[in-house]
Length: 584
Image 1 (cartoon, helix red, strand yellow):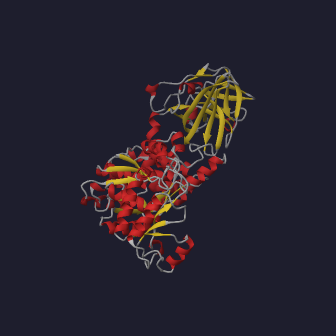
Image 2 (cartoon, rainbow, N blue to C red):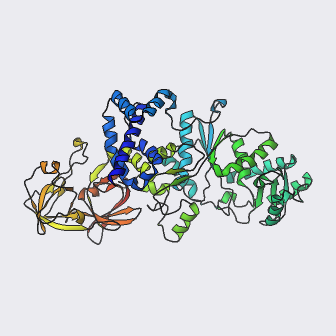
Image 3 (cartoon, helix red, strand yellow):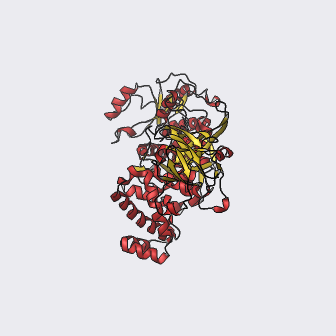
């Protein structure tokens, strides 16, 4: 990052931090201003991993000001934002906009409607993050309905049901009720029969291409005027499985001359030869299309507000025809744009991720290279950090961009104070500088860096030297120069030996000596750090063996990492540690 970009980032961060602190009458948080900062300044995104480090000191400086000083400084930098603060009501603190017509309902009832054709990718987190937050705001009710009525093209994965519920829990929410649409097929049949009796549906055996041509020209299907009794009998035959796939469908009568051809006489039920993977649903061959199934369920389960993608606007219009036939009131609808997430080479697509796993290009849904909730969870990123970043995006109908750096900043705020520090010397792998072993002479037998630099009460680590240490090659000083081994002291390189000196910490404060991390050559732990760019191998300090799976450590000067496994290494008769890199 050049000086000009750094200066721009600091200026923008100061304005955002001042505004955030004054608006909420509390300290500004790096995570809270990261999203808006990156959204308002697209040029910063290529420096995503660096921006948080640049703005953190700015936020700290702002938090050291009094309220009056903050307001005076904001008036100096951005007077229009002071006016905005003065015009805002205290109730405007919530990030999400008010739900439409919320006061008209005794209870706000919303639904998550996942298709369980695989675990969730990261974009899927937006739905529970926003709906779960609305549930909390309105003290409402939240349903998780698995829309699993497509056993063929979006074939359910039997493991995905529990994996999705686990993801919702990880994000910090709990549905009030969970249902599977495949358990409710008889309900959809009953409503189809009622719709037929109302003259609102007919059975059609037109080939798909032939019907499409008729539809696009605004001409009625020759089956459209069948009498109700014939339609009922043919639908009963569909339910009994007497037709093959593609042989017969049930269509909803709409307006055959509607200006939008997509809304003309749409399919409500079709025949599917592929059995559903759930045993309880495996006998059905006549399956509802999503627009019919979802529309019926939303009414029967009392949903008052639906949040869905803007690409599903036609679904609301199709369902409205069904609601008109039954005399139902359609729920309030919020349509939002797509969310795009940076930092990943793998597309955010369930089918693509499945293909790459099956091809061996990914090790699984929790591969750190996969843009999935399972991946972030295994990397040690808290669900709350994802939720906060998603909520910051709001519910705009425009497409929005989410920088992973905003999730990382949120997570850093959540975990930094409680996370112990440790050393990791990287040896091989993407961008690994390589480890160099050098003897240490005339120094103490061990180093004692703090467990956490901000909490002396948590004590100090003991790292034995055992005669020689490993340092990263990039940290190795030229012959004759000094370097400070953190927690140990100052050493001077003399040929291929590090000789301990009597220099005190003033050498570091004066800027004449760099501070580096290190590990003992003999007692260090063989460690793998799994990252989005591939595995990095290296050596961790001995104390890391005391941590267990799911513990988080910060490898100093490297970043936060989740301990995944600590096992005996048969090859070296030592201990092998596997960790997953979270973020800087």
